[in-house]
Image (cartoon, rainbow, N blue to C red; front, side):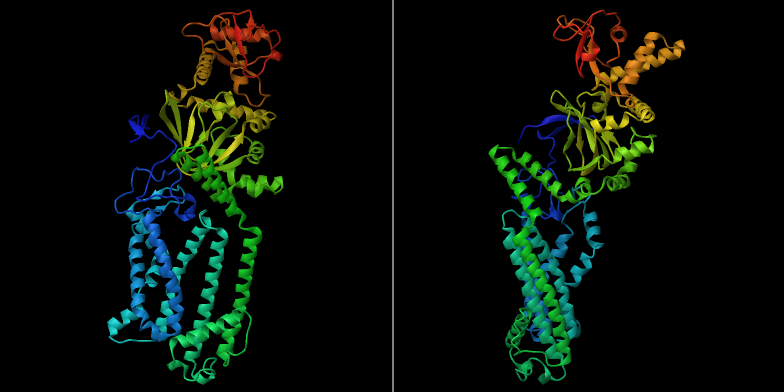
Length: 637
């Protein structure tokens, strides 16, 4: 059993968690050897680790990507091929439906009846969370309320056998032939089967598509020939039919002789060879032949179009996805990455291709900016207006901001923001949910949960400090990303909006939990200074010169985004070569004032003693504040 580490749950209880915290471990009873072989409707939950021992599904629940269940589905595809052949055949040759084919039909129907029962125990993927739903009631309700259930039942019932049991008679009525055509509903399984093969990197996409086109052509030829024979058998004068002209009393002849003639006529008509030896005789046959030839025009165009697409375009998107998956597999093998990390990479890549059509930048990149702005407002304006930072700002600010945001999707259990990374962007959660966590001594601690229309990453951006927390998705989530650089440029000329954002930001900081503030010493110090200053103003009723300078540099310039962003520096109250041995060695983050005198005044208020000299970390003395840069450390003594 692999080693584990202790973490804290939201309730404060300790629990064990895998050393790979980003992966959500859930398994079926089988292994998945190739993630790319799964169709989009049967993908396991993103971040699932496959091929290892872990938590199993509930009892009597089948995973849709279970290896044994997939073999069962493949076996049913073979039976569907038989149903596609027998249904039109039994309509045309009613003797076969009550003769040799009847036992075979009953056996095939029995297998599909078993599949209907199994469907009530097969878990399904929730489209919003991409997690498996295992509750039996939800599985049954979903199946019973879907069109699949009545059509599955109707295509499985042996109507002719049921009639024989009830009446005690064998009937070859035409109605049973048409009822047998309901079995063609099963053809959707073949379509899904080919779609899955097309995405499977183990099979050639060209030959998979080529086989699919051949199957479509053979089914069209077979169905048309059977319907044409059925027209001949039901015509009142057998000798005045396309088959009666060549074979007198053809109804009494062999079934396979009639089937051979039917296929011969269908193929020469489809290929437009048209030898003329078999042709329509009566009006009904001519009408059917007209429609069949029109259908052949469409079918031929379909075949030629698909072959052209295969040869010229070669399904660019699918090939790109397959190549990207192969690159990840080669990279993981070359660098000997753990299996869990490799599967996480594959899951993220799969989500990227599944949501590519939803990414706004791909859709909007060729449109004029005015149209892009209008579309973005329609999609995200309400979300921006309801976030805590932008409540009450002007329409101009929202319009300009929303036109530059970027939409992104993240699968479950993926880190969007990483603790201690350099802040470049902040995010607004449009849909989904994320967890805010922190790491202490290598152990993960849960802090809070964020939902839609909530913001994260803005504290690190505004204070220009490393991100204090890790933000991780709980389920499939859509976020909009706002660039730090663009945000600062936008807010500079809008002074009133900057003041509103300042007020909103301070109120948000005051509402943070104590455990969150404990992870951000600079933010805690800023709030303490702000609270002390407000208390001092309330007590004295007036602002002194030092208090005024302190407010202007620690409050207004720290977060007043309406002005030009000031330079932020860290000040210390001792000589760089004489650091205190214990306590008091933490720096103070401030915005650089406009003069040395004001800087000394701020340092006096911070450290409680007046300094006269300002030096850099290397000991060089500071005389001109304009020479300082963002993040410099100043030592005042």
